[in-house]
Every structure is written in C-alpha cells, then in structure tokens.
Image (cartoon, rainbow, N blue to C red):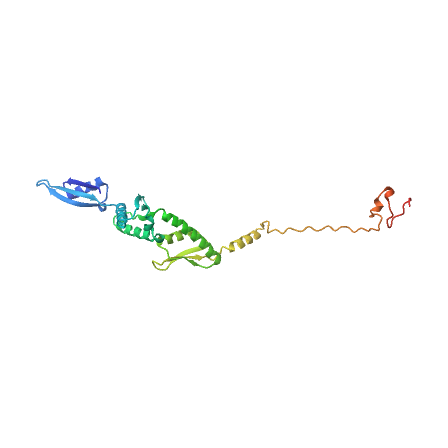
Length: 268
C-alpha cells in the first residue's frame, strides 16, 4: 500500500498535499498519524495511507480462500473500465467451479461484497475458471435457440429448469431478437427459471404465407407451374382399298402385284 508523510502549517494543507502526491481522493485514503510541533510557528505532520483498491481486496480475498482450502489454483487479475476480472487456473480449478458453476458464483458474490466499499465506480465482479463461463454461454445459447424453435412450432410455452442470474441472462440475451418468441423469468430464488413463450405467428405458418404471397404476385416456382400435356396427333385413317393408299399400287416394274381396287397389270 502506498503511504506518504507530509508536514505543513495546518492539517488541511498537509492533507491536500498528500492527496495530490498520491493522486487519490479523500475516500481512497486513510490518515493514520497526526503530530503537531513548534511553539511560535506550529507545524502539523500527518501520515496518509492509500486504502486497498477493490481489485486488491477481491484478489486478496479469493487468494485467501484458496489457501485455506488447500487447493492448487493460481489467480490472475485483469482490471478494465467495466469489470474486475479474476481468472482461476490449475489442477483443482474444477473444485472451485462446482456443479454448473454454483461454487464459482458464490465466490464471485462474496468477493463483490468484500470489494464493495472500495469500489466507487461500481465495477462488476467476474470470476472465471478455465474459460468455464464462455463455454457455458455457448451451450446455453444453443439450448435456447433449439427450445425457441420448438416452442414457436408447437405454439406451447416451454419452461426451463431453475438457473442462476448469470445463466438466465444468457437465455434472455440469446432470444432477445427472436420475433417468434419472448422470454420471462418466473418463480422465486433460488428456484427462479426462464419460460419461452411463443408469439401468435408460428414458424410453420411462414411457408404457407410465402406461397400465398408468390401467388398474389404471380411469381411461381418450378413446382408451382402446371406443365401442359401436348395433344396427341391423330393419324388420318387410310382406306386400304383405295389405290391411292395402297402400298403395292405405288411399286413400279415387274414387282407389281394385284391390289384390291386397282387395275390388273398387263403382264398377268
């Protein structure tokens, strides 16, 4: 922890100089010592110590819990403008994750309480182990979309099993832009769950609506067009007794034979 000792003509002047040197606000420091000296010209000496930050408090708390549990887990911290992120790694990380992250969520909640008073910016606390939360997000997103399709197709609501706030938030976010269903959280903690509610427009009506729109616009696909069957050309009936249509009558030379209705050849 940073600390500084300042001597000035007054307490307020010394405190102002200490805050300027530490580049901290009054809420982020603690005055541990005050001494006055001098008879004619009095001097005030103070010792100002910077309070541990929210990141330091959370890191120290999680580190202490791991040591008391005797687990082989390393803790790294990643501080950004939006959240305080603590990442756990090691062979015993699964023990700190628990069943569906319940131990991890409890540890995260306690770390947030510890750092709460020294967290003036109100940053979120996120504790993750071996990318568990990212993997869980992918799994729940796929589940949400699959159940949403089922609910929209059947027209019946589907209730999921009880989930913690982190998991419920994933379901709501995954289906926020789905125009066929809406989501709502129901029940009381710790048995609060998400219900997927279908809208009036069902997914199975979509195909029928598109066909109807195509017909109105007279836009048909290959399977919508009726292919006309060509008419069979009727052959003209031939009178075999007529010399004009007789096959033998059309022959020339000695090969001619007698045909019905035709004159006899001069050779017979």
